[in-house]
Image (cartoon, rainbow over all chains, first blue to last red; front, side, top):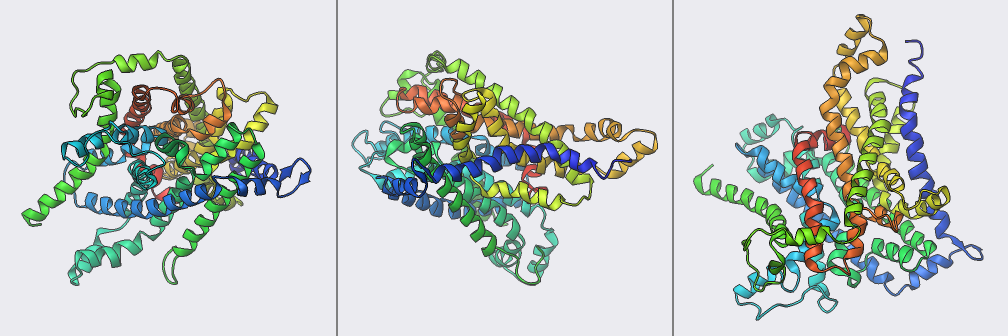
Length: 282
Length: 268
């Protein structure tokens, strides 16, 4: 083929151009918008964001949510993949059921848990039948912020653990069974085999899963609005509010820049924390 | 394994299954269990009778059908764009060693560190200028930016799995480069490509933030439901939730074999 040196570039060009236009350009625009004020470039919008009444709450809520939910999801996903490993039959069926939430949007997940946790919902029915509460009771208000947080945490956990699970299972499938068998022959207990053999071999899968999940968790938005409404501000819902309700694109862009910076920082931390040690394969 | 441990193990698995399925069952109960179920107290855990009254009432909310059709339109466009743009790049990564391939791969992976949906905010301004703000095309373009990196990585691992020798044999027998691709590689890759397409569809179907920011009057289903949150009665919201979930559950079933190709080795 005469032109084969050019061919790969022709093949990747459309996607590269597309990503540059719809990813690179808006990224630059966001930053430009964030620092554009009526009187030239400056930090006016940033100041407005910092003085926003809900700003500190939204920062705290976002971080609390991410820091609580992501480790829980990793632990659950590891447990689930270890269970799956020892299954002899109905494996395909169970795998499908466990991955169903992968296809569920965060808005739908919010609505699902709203049905359960609303004042006349299923949770209250159970509590009522057990004699814990005397009648319908509302949990999802600003008066019970702890319960509200827990509800959103549960909804996020329910919806988005599947993605971590799938990445981990894909990694587990690459580990030869012989390693564990060898450890077993030398007398390692099940826990030791998991801790000393499986877990280190899963390092890069865990890294991928954590990055994906953390960045998405910082973006969580519809699930929060469906369950908490305006009572539980997070960074992205604030960006939405400023863009739509207040029609102030500049402050909205400030929030977007903040979310982007936070996501990048989290990615870096995960990359560094789980980097290959000397002598380990990458 | 001893019998007790076996039983513990099985009940653990069933517990996780129930944890996934019961909430979906309950929302379905609210969606198709009749208006009484939604406001009943205490709540019945079994349907008093199957009634699509809530569901049909929900479907008659003004603007819902158009929103749903628009969602399908957007998702189909996103699917087509991701494949048309992504599959060639995936093929190039799998088959050619070329200068810059690592840079390109890194660029694709980098998109993961960014909250891509958020980039819809400035795009709204740009799309107004281009005259495509508040159209399905605008949302589809944004959703393609979300789905394209996946499409590239998945198709690349797909093509890697098809032996190069098959293609070379076709050349020997006189096929041109594109001819060999069409006659030999494509038939083998079709199921995986279909799975990639479905995954792009699901990404678009589920996306809320960008869809809400880029539309005002021509909302997609998710964006429309988001505006209903504060206004519509609970049974409509639950019917909406059910409507969002059902296609996804079906699609995940269809692509279940390829989930690990999507998230597996090639996707590091």
